[in-house]
Length: 62
Image 1 (tube, rainbow, N blue to C red):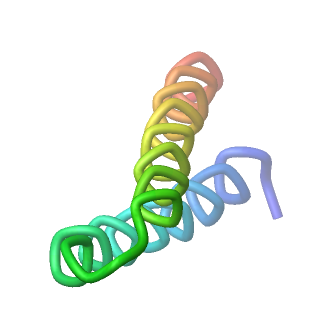
Image 2: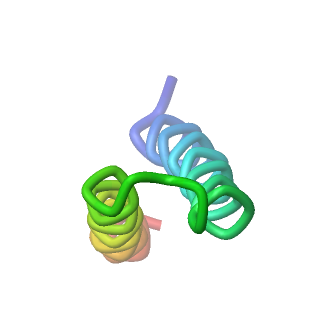
């Protein structure tokens, strides 16, 4: 497996995870304890930052 293929696979998986967390936050956020909601939003932002970095790396080797 090439590095580009591996990065594409990782990025795709991270995009799916980000979508699932966003859906969870948007759908059930009001019913969550505030600390759980805060942690999920922070995780969502962290994944977004990771995706931006992965896309930058993929763009440099692609």
